[in-house]
Image 1 (cartoon, rainbow, N blue to C red):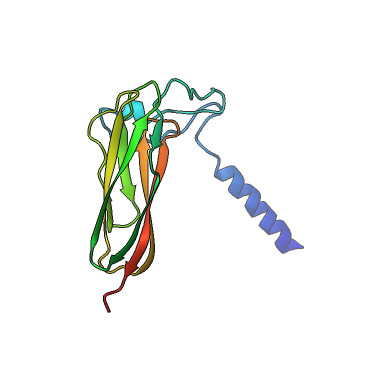
Image 2: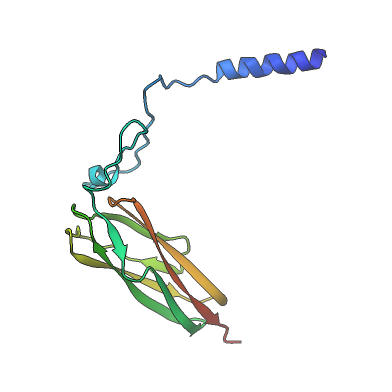
Length: 160
């Protein structure tokens, strides 16, 4: 019984001692790095404000999934994911990345005007890979939604 009271007392003290420095109504915003387009990319959203999904850039890919079929281990696959900005604001792509170093996407350097098209070239290096492959490329932009994904998939045949 004494141990239970001691544990409860310690938990209560811990909760009081770990009180946050953030006051009610304040928001904690973490900003890493800086760029000339950061104000276009970072849209601070709160539960109190409606999200404007009309007056924004919108990215739509012609082919969001590309199946390259079969390749021999060691071959490189190149494909350009074509897209259109169907929004009414210029589209700025901040980042395009894959979780694996074998898949290298290249983001457009210039903003894409409303109604204009662009592309994200991707190179997949199959060296050291074998079997079914699925590589996701995540695109971060000022569009709504801010993250989009495309998929490169296929099968790598071992040379052995």
